[in-house]
Length: 346
Image (cartoon, rainbow, N blue to C red):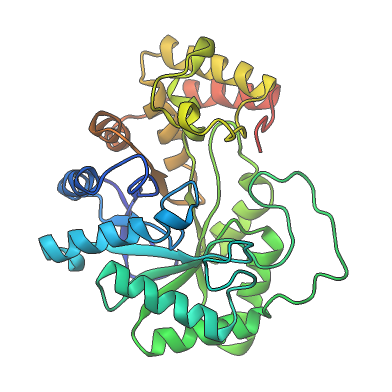
């Protein structure tokens, strides 16, 4: 396994992070336990979850993934071996989450954290992340930014950092991070943390894969210079970058079979790019899944690549990607496809 520092901390996290959002929906608790056992045995010490998991969001499964992880901690007594990350959701219309609305004010974020700690059966979280901004901005694949002068009710960044600082002082969390955030959002948080001597955002969890390299445009430089690295989610683009959906295939019980409204990676140019990336992997006799993951891992702004698997076979293939290498020729060929089909699925 490979390791990198989390931000400018002294924490070493595996460059493969175990994603968990299918546990409680597509995976049972026992399957989640098997994944955690195997991942830890392979040197993966970084787990990522969220209060809203499993996905897709449903009242019936809210918090279920955290509960599964907590039950594993209780059974194995391995909490001290894991760097644990979870998230508090931003603005939401789901009334079952603290009545809906904004969630980063002091009262609600305190309640969210305490409930996550309870479900996870731990007294601290290593990395506590804001799952998406409260303010109206372009995330979750939204193209462009449309400014709304009336969108002023979100919690001020300084107030959020002050609440998070209280949690750090209380020993409930160690470090903080962002998710689905923009360059402006990260820059403002970093600016305020410096000016007010408040905790620093150590990471940004955003999508990054061969079909969506938009992180490189504005956020990459900030990540490198400020040591707030990327935790890449969806590195396999809902499984499209494994090749399993090629030629209109739709494997039974796959995500695209079960959740047909997940359409971010379905457009025409995306499918053309997938085929060309697949051909590169075949030309160089490298597993397509592992090529896709390794390309993410080697980026200079990357801290860790979050994998998500529903079978042990998938998990083993994903983790093994750390041991492959990409030649300059492969990287150059990948970059040529990016020029041909620039970010077809942002």
